[in-house]
Length: 111
Length: 112
Image: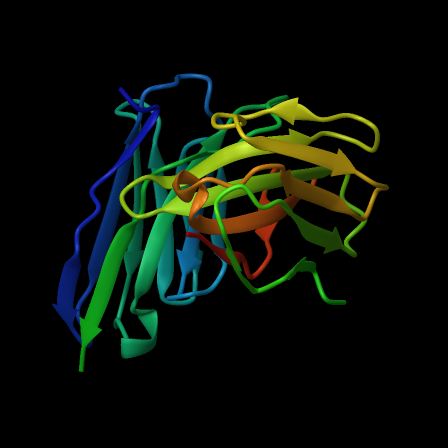
């Protein structure tokens, strides 16, 4: 079993819809949670970063962590065609040099 | 401030050839990483360097070597390329306070 599991999709939604992207993790020691966005033929770029449980909002994006169920979510409101990309979740724990990545979910926003 | 840069962007090799992928960061980060990304496999860590002068194996180190030349630069070497090493290679560096990693644009490598 991978430490971070992510549905690879693909996921297609109409423009303006709310998108929900999800990951589950198995390592209880994970404290840092990140979402990366990767456009086609580009490197991953950091989108959201959260520490421990709770919500974090940045514009149209909300990252949510539920440590009791080991569930990580990214919500995109008012989705735009420019949000079409692959989204990767990642986790780590204090003192660990390495990030554990999900395999990524490919998202397409249909105009 | 260029962030993380990688060269070359594209490379085609024949089986058995060698090459070195270069990576540099200008963010004064201590830790640097090499990943490969393959369809359906996600990002897999090849090697990493927690500080200048140290390197450690990641998940898929076989067939690769690395050198942490100085704080800025971290290179990845393929001594004898194999078709299984056809992939997209990403270099990253880590911000200590937030534990987040910042990625370069990648090198697309094809081994024939």
